[in-house]
Image (cartoon, rainbow over all chains, first blue to last red; front, side, top):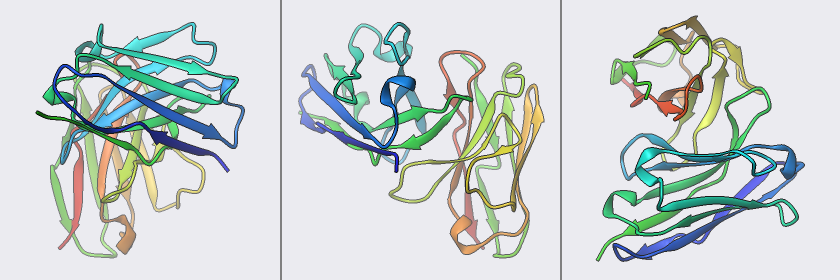
Length: 118
Length: 107
């Protein structure tokens, strides 16, 4: 059974940093592109970042470029999102999401809440 | 960035009725469009990919159509568990983008 479990969320002050982790199981992690997608409270979905299986390709949405870094450790079946210089508008539930080989997300984690507030 | 506009924002229907949701793209996304369902407090669930292909385990009452800039999601006969928010999403151009969602609520 495919499982994606996020951790590392919490309350952080504006300008602070946080690192999210996603532990994957039930599939060959290194073979799959992975993503972070977020959802602000009561709002819609926004793609944050994308990383290929080999880490050769990474994409970021403009609003997080230069502040967030996506990475993975295939030996540990883990995906990460390092978030620096956090802003109020980064407050959201962050989902770890697997990209199916034929495109689109076929599995989602349960989400990790990040709250940026003073 | 490709903007996806969903309509209507809210659809009020009764169980057993047919639901038709629309998603319009600001430029062509070819057939690279998906539909997701999100129930309160849950992560999204993939329903349809590449405009018209049902994902694994999705009931046949869900169907998708369209290409280019205009797409539809149809639920042929609403079940109680179908009342939720539905999002379309494109993967033709980075950044992948979502529509703002259509809420299907019980009338």
